[in-house]
Image 1: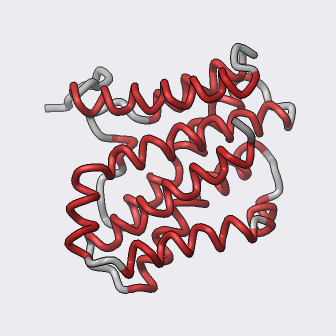
Image 2: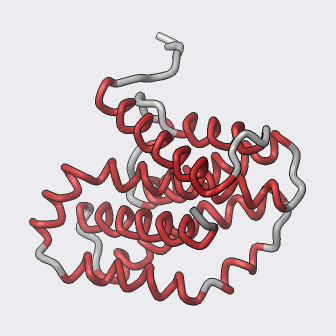
Length: 200
């Protein structure tokens, strides 16, 4: 599993995820494009800010921009009812793929930049969950990162394993991606959640 493959998987998954949420909220084509774009690239931008990587590097990804906008346009041009039905059934799965791919990519990027273990964990968490958080905020929804089912923890766990040097090579990286996706889907299916305290 190469860096480029992770980038493409994460970008496509989150671009589609953002576009589907925008269409569900009845955005126009400009809103769909903006939400899809910010979902796909927002997490990487936040990561760069946090670990000291130049933010303007985001603008060097011309081919990924074209890929993301093409995917968003395809989503927009299909009949709305088909996509909304599709989102209701598979939207969480797309989001889980984006979470896993970007968490792993962000963690490896932090390792390559010489970040500490805590920096790697933060980079994984924000790259994986940041785009979805921005998407939900722009759409006026409670961010998925704060919902009952465990979400960002799986990105942080991936970052921890990579930061400790336990994940090396394509097969182990691919296995980690699959594991994060499965854990996220199990969290949704079985309503796993972290402890919380109520003020009432």
